[in-house]
Each structure stands twice: as C-alpha cells, then as structure tokens.
Amino acid sequence: MTFYLIGLGLNEKSINLETLEACKKSKKIYLDNYTIDFPYKKQAIEKAIKKKIIVADRALIESESIVGESKKSNIVLLVYGSPLAATTHISLILKCKKEKTKYKIIQNSSIFDALAETGLQMYKFGKTTSLPTWKENYKPASFMQFIIDNQSIGAHSILLVDIGLKFSQALEQLKQAAERYFTKIENIVVCENMGTKNQRIYYNTTDKLKKLKVKSPYCIIIPSKLHHIEEEALRELTK
Image: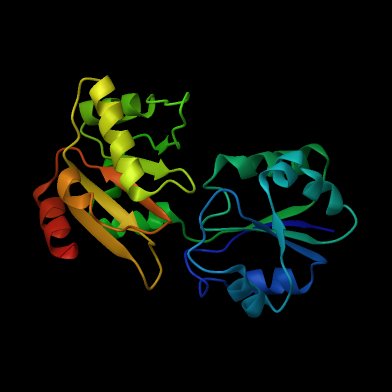
C-alpha cells in the first residue's frame, strides 16, 4: 500500500499521466484546500481523474491520519502546484519514513516556476516570505525584514499572500509595514492566476496598481536592482 503526494500544477489541464494512474488504483483521493485559493473548482479535477475527491482541511492534514490510512490501502493527497512547495507536506513524508510506510511523490510545476514569466532572473531571488491577514490586535510586519535583507544583497523578494486577503488590503498592509520599518516600497510586480488562462502580470508603482481588481491566487514581487534584460522583459511582458 502506498501514500501518494501529488502536485496538480497550476491549472486543471496540468494533471499528468502518472497522477491519473495513481488515482485510478487508490481507494481515497484527498485534496488539500487550505494552503491556496484554487483558480478552478474541484469538480474540474474530479472530471479529469474520474473519481470523487474528499476535501482535506488543515486539521486533517496536520493530524497526519492520512498516512495511517495508507497502511491499508493506496491513498492520494492532491496539492495545488508543487507537492512540496509548502512546508506543511514534508511532515507527511517524514511520518511515512518513521512508520516505514511506502510513499511516492509525483512532481509538478509551482508558482516558483511560473514566476520566470515575469522576465526576472530566477537566481536573483532571495528569501521567500509571506504576507498574513492582519486583524485588529494582530498586525505582524516581520516580513519586511526579509525584504530589506534581500534588497541589501540585490535580491528580489517573493511575497506569498495569505488566503482570502484582498489585493487592496495587501497593498495597504505592505505600505503600513514599510512605514514601520522606515522604508518605502515603490515599484512592485503582481502575478495573478499564473499558469491559467486568466494569467496577468503587472509592473508599476503601488499607487498606480491599487485600483486593480486582482483575483486570487496572486503573489507580489518586490524587485531589487534590475538587470537591463529584466527591465526590458518587465516593460514588454506587462504591456
């Protein structure tokens, strides 16, 4: 019996033959629905794999009970993008190793692959950080330190945005966080629905972009010093 951790890629047509074969011989198909806002409905996946999907919330995945189930039958966990891009899922593989449970990882593309379409050079990206949803008494801004550190070595910063955080709110939080660190963020790159038919890439100042109605999933890049090829690519690819 095998636990399958499978990446779905970035759109409903990215499901590969290896994934179809694994789903066909598995008893249960789970779908991680808490690490990303899906750009399509789960019914599109069910249509592709010809099986019903069980939506797995955070509590179910973090309980690692799915690994226990795979001792008796083949179990699949589908993950948007790459199966191991989110740090959550490596704990399931470690659980398999500890309990001597057979497992197989089926790779696919992630947002990190798609970001190359911005024209920014991938080896110039620094540490990735996240922008959480602020609440009345919870407004963390420590992600700004990652951005500042990246800027100090000429590296671009990827800012992964919390599920449910609207674009206008994200920009306002980014502005306030920068002010708390006595700095200012001007030009940004916004990547919307990458890898799908609704993909959009924007590059401008935060003031000029704040009126956009950007739909999830999206992420924000704070570029550092640009190579002239990067400048040309951003200018041409975001027209």
